[in-house]
Image 1 (cartoon, rainbow, N blue to C red):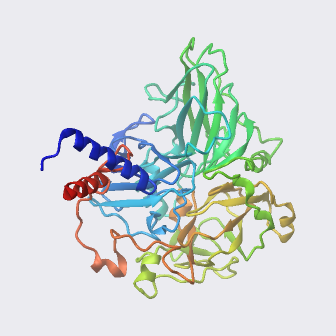
Image 2 (cartoon, helix red, strand yellow; image 1 turned 30 degrees about the vertical axis):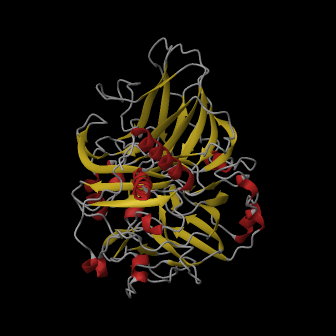
Image 3 (tube, one colour; image 1 turned 90 degrees about the vertical axis):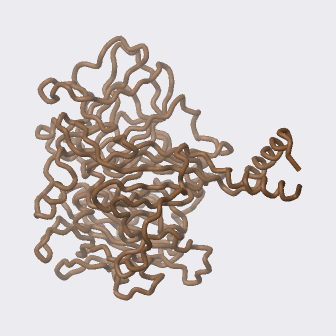
Length: 590
């Protein structure tokens, strides 16, 4: 019997209701293509890695609990993986996008990531994790917004602005790799980019003419949420906006106690959200500045990123001197004290309708203690290498969890030392045999000569202590056991230490690393292997159907097929399958 148009429309309506009422958390879909383009951010044409033809790449906007599907097309001439630092992939280290957990995506192949942003909010970014590729681009913002039923701990901003800052070299990432492989230091970067663009010409001597710069357009009287990510290679940057206060509100997925800063040091790999009110008289535009820290300022004058904040009623261009950076001459602990002033907002809801600070971490007994000590790079077996605890990590040919699944012997070792080794440094495939549901203390002792960023995939941790000097057990008396900030990337000052506490409730294999790209490339990383001894497929997802095989399992890899799993780029959930199912069922009934 033929169906009337009105009846068909009613069926479609039912199908939509079916999808909305019976579907689980929605799916959002993205298609990414990484390729090379030529740009001149510092006035010199160079090859960079673009995402969907743009540099930097597009912003991901998703909502708490969304299932995220990202089809990545590798149009580079080398292997590729995309990683999502700070995005806590529950039970899914298979999707982490680092060599210890994923086989790489070969050139001219695609691979589809799928993970859930379960119980998360906040500001993050994605980037290519292999072989210093981030030094050439390939990065973009990854924003997870609150569900509507969860209120923000501040008035809804009038707008959302993403700013990506980072040191930049005019040598491409392959040249930087060659230098490191030859035992050379990367040297001083050529500049600092803001949203992929060079500095505004605030100084005719330091900044050549003809460089394209970033302009942020705003309206007077409005308040904007400005999310700032340091996506650079190795340089801590001080971020500031001329004549404007930065009200800190969130960092890497957790709301902070709201404090005003005139500037903030943002270390490599870190992300922050500021609330900035446009309360100036707009007699001219204003400078947005990202300048290098812990360096010889007179030598590094040219390594400064400058963008323009433009009021819609501005009366002229920005002019004059840049706003001053912090002065550490009389307060050498300024940056450290500033870092420890960043506290968790214990009265705010996060992704769930309960106070995010209600987890009383300070009263939990520590089950294991790990000291991770970093030293300046040394030559091991004729190659310059960087180490944790005297071990420079060599990525396994077969990713760790894949080796477990298929019983590949000798792929890695479960013998990473909990204390620094006393013998000569060595290369190894040594990982931490961590205990599921353990609550561990990690002391990051930086005996290197440069400030470092430390990152832990799959987790956030409480930054409970930070100081200069060698850590001792007496330092535990100074730990913040109430409102320490909870984040996934922390700084460790040269000649100093940082202490973190973390609950190991996310099974899988998770990367621990220096976020400084040169130290990471030279081997300053390891992994935590966290396995539920009573595994019943509820605490860890099995390997996905599209898992790539390499190393000892390379013969299992099937030929590449074109993926259609992420055909939508708008990020809207798919209901077509639901519609077809319901219509088919209705027609069969008729």
